[in-house]
Amino acid sequence: MVRLRGMTWDHPRGYDPMVATSAAYAKAHPGVDITWEKRSLQAFADRPISEMAETYDLMVIDHPHVGEVAKMGNLLPLDGLRDAEMAALAAGSVGLSHPSYNFAGRQWSLAIDTATPVACLRPDLLEHAPKLWAEVLDLARAGRVGFALIPINALMTFFGMARNLGHAVAEDPDHLIAPDAGAHVLGLMREILSLMDRRCLKLDPIGIYEWMGRTAEAPAYSPFGYGYTNYSRNGFCAHPLAFHDAPGIAEPTPRGTVLGGTGIAVSACTRHPEIAVDYAFWIAGAECQKGLFTASGGQPAHAAAWEDDACNALTGNFFRNTRQTLDTAWLRPRYEGYMTLQDRAGDIVHACLRGDATEAATLAALDVAYRESRA
Image (spheres, rainbow, N blue to C red):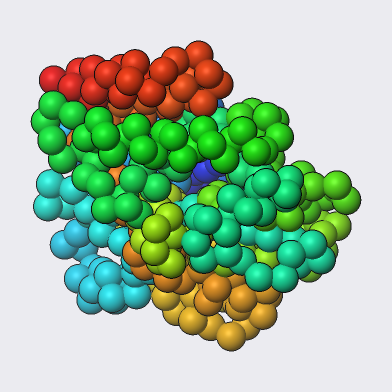
């Protein structure tokens, strides 16, 4: 019996499809057993990949770690193993999902899940999703808006709004963002926060969707939040949610939201690389992605699923309604020290939103954190 251990994140979207696909794979390959363990999102993010690679054969990872991975060599590079299948995955990528795991000329993971901040609404409370920020502000003035602003989501919103406006982020070696551009975005964020329930500062996207999907008195609309198809599926929550493209700040385009999602990676320490690689390519492929993976609660990264009628019927047209946002999402930096910046910068932006720091002090602190992360 070949036994493989995997690590993923603790949410139905992150865990259920891994269990379902592993059971199907084991049925088709007698003598193979794949088991999955799960950790909270924060615990998952905090545990170094180098440590996980010593324990697990398979890992679900997110792309900002690949700079670290490329240097440490903890994962098995997947390029050069199955060229035809790799080319098919690249051709079927939704937005930059597949290339986000390519770094320093190697493919460190295969995209199986994709997400970016998109808009969400309660169909029983709001009929149409705004396309412009001015419309979002009008809804907020009426007390109908809420979205996730814990530190990491505050930072992703800051980046996404900046990129939507065309501002450069992390391109100047001395400044994370130009001071006037950064001040403008912080001002926009502070303005809408003043019109929302302060609990948004303590909620992640799941918390927002739980609030919207399970309580009668809730915001009607969220302009930015990493999408979760679970909440648009019948029976998952009391009030199924509808997801749409994110609004634009000055123009009606969602471009610039920050790409998220996860990929399946193989530990360089595994004793069974052939089987682990075979499972990884299968779960990332078109047939599994639009079939069992989505049916068991997954949020696929393959265009075959995003364009599939059955997948869209299952999720209230989540995929078709948010495709433009995914296709125009921004790929955040992936250099080796980026994760240190992300951890620090989220707290810095959050302090500004809480009113504990001025915009000028916030931007200065962001620049310090940015420069130190690149040193």
